[in-house]
Length: 223
Length: 282
Image (cartoon, rainbow over all chains, first blue to last red; front, side, top):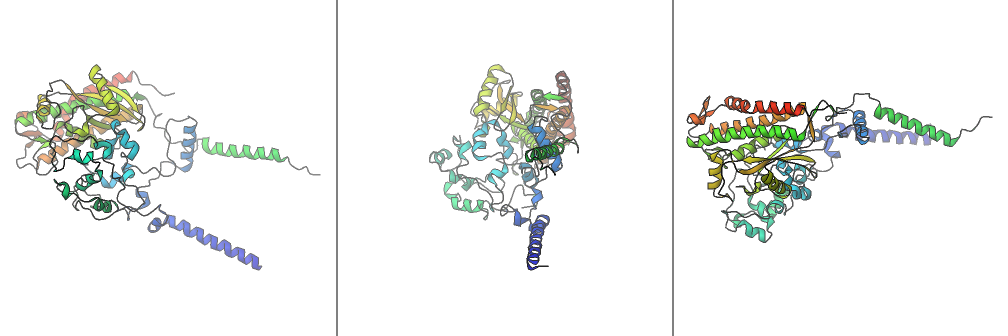
């Protein structure tokens, strides 16, 4: 074999090894984090891809056929290709609760149109965007979309809610209220006792919970 | 001397070949095509489906409101909006019983939405807004259910009047410290149930699944109440008897049997009426 031929063979060998290694990462569960879009969110590090990314029904050919038929008006319903879009069902499989002060399905009522358009509140993944290594990404002003005209007949706190709203102090909401109300705790009665926005931000980013650790409805894993 | 093939002609043959292969791949019915859920069997318009499931809901709500809450309060059973709290010896108020059922339906994977709202709700979070408020005004004026499409969520929506069916509805709402309206009368339209579903027609099989999911919701809600009642310091006896007989609660089976007795005849009748509208899709 000539020197040029040997070099060519070495290139092919090297290329094959790299391709096989790449393929191996898609097959081995422990290596899945390598090709994930980003770091898993808080508490999700041990999940495998398929726990959320479920395969769509049918073979590739069946799915392509169904899509072609749908585009040509030969069938009424479209199908998903490859993997199904991650929806609330996947989250609910571990985070199912009998009680939730803001259950996502509640926002499918027509009157929440603005909140859906701005925040996508009807989907878990709108606030809990996955693969960015945090717990939640709720914007500080999120509460304003539904609670901007809040006036309580018997307001239980020292600075009434409508006063906090008048000065647009939306950052204070989560200082007292746990969004899903899933922690066993007593809500503060004084604004001075509210957790600071920086503490809440740290919690959202994956830090310790200021609301305590005892959950009303723990996840399937007991967390 | 061999002739050089016409390049243009060869390209046409190549493209024709590619289209043929793609055509066979996409349109030859091998393997079996995926089921098109909207083409399988006969279909019922979604309005009919909403009417059927709303009638089921009326039966369940009336049974719970009159026979459990109404008589229950007279014999000392408590009902509260804070019924989920461990130290509150109470069951769910009728509106919360409906919410329990709605939450259970959501977990059933049947995409049927159910909400209760009003223009004078005790909890402000149940106040109608936007399209629902407009439709509710129309409902008050006409006393007819409202059907419309919500394009942003791609859902068919129906609203049905929620009436003051028992004296307890009126007294509780008129006496509640947070109630924005205190002159309710028996028979008033106190609010509306809002239902949603993603398709404009359902198959008979889907209709059955929807009814089953709704009834499952009612059962789950009642079981949750029984579980809470068992933790009262003085738990009521659970069995064949009802609160109108004393400090008793019907068991799950007894409650469900009575609910089915009240609802099933009407549901079958509505399905048979809808049968005249059934058609096989082209």
